[in-house]
Amino acid sequence: MHPLKVLGLCSLLLPLALMSGCGPSDSSSASSASTAPKVVAAFYPLQYAAQQVGGTDVSVANLTQPGVEPHDLELSAAQVAEISQADLVLYVKGFQPAVDEAVAQQAADRSIDVTAGLQLLDGPEGADPHVWLDPANMSKIGSVIAARLSAIEPEKATSFTTNSTALTASMNALSSEFTQGLATCKAKTLVVSHSAFAYLAKAFGFTQVGISGLNPEAEPSPARMRDVAEVMKANDVSTIYYETLVDPKVAQTIADETGASAVMLDPLEGLAFDSTGDYVSVMKTNLETLKKGQQCL
Ligand SMILES: [Zn+2]
Image (cartoon, helix red, strand yellow):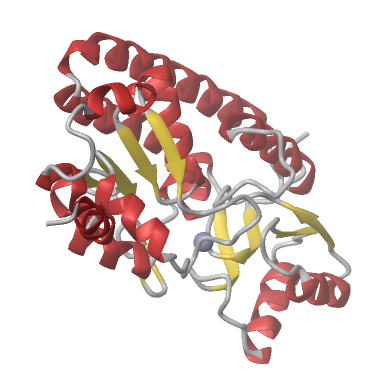
């Protein structure tokens, strides 16, 4: 067979190339910069956890670009190929159907549904996927990632374990800051544009009222908006929270009707397009926002 034909066939079968021996036989030198395990995270908080635990010993890609709302993410062919070639894919089952499908088809044995070992809360449309908004869950997710990376790269296991312990310490410190900062809040009702904050609410003593359900794209009915306005009046809610990646118009409308102020609270589903922050810095900004909005004096 003509060598070019072999090459052409191999590039068509790119996802299989590593397994089937396509490409240069001495692939170790060609890919020395990329021999680190490839981790593909479905969206930002999982990227953060993987980077904290993997450090410089892994490469981490994120399927959800900054500024993009991750619910109902659509995948390009290149991203599906990325999933098929990953050593490990981190995702939340039921959060992004296209990712669920690609993982099932391409990476079933090389993936972690990070919610598998967590205690899930019920939401209006089934299990609530927004586990990352309780730092304690981020710590558990880090431990699971460390165990799996250690199996993939046993000689780096000590480093993964050390990094995971450091992530736990950092998440514990963050939880303590929240507990102390929110200990004296007068307002216990947390009114948010979509129901992303149940885990945060449960961890720190609030009751969440979401204008939309678990998916921010769901347009609330006028009746739902009236209900929320009534709950706000009944509970002396002075602040309603909208978010970075979703149009604030519904939250603003209810705020105008009730005389509340509308301020931004970040559900950390992704970083904003030009953000220079990370999980911890965004959560600390959220804490300051909540201290004001929930009247924690
Ligand atoms: Zn959400």
